[in-house]
Length: 76
Image (cartoon, rainbow, N blue to C red; front, top):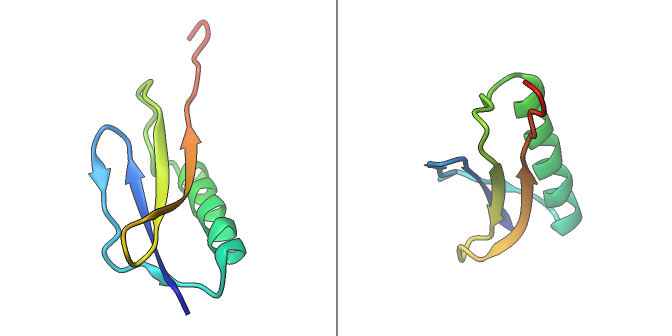
């Protein structure tokens, strides 16, 4: 099974050095979206007006997927 690495970029890089073995690209995309949503709902990311993203790479460090987040605090 291919191994995928889920890195967080939010003004600094949090590099995943372990990764996950997943059966295919569909499972990898599902896991990336689930993990990003979990981080948001758990408050693991503090919103300081900056965008952040999760970048998924394969074993060769090729980017295969990305999820981008930003919040506009209109009037706050």
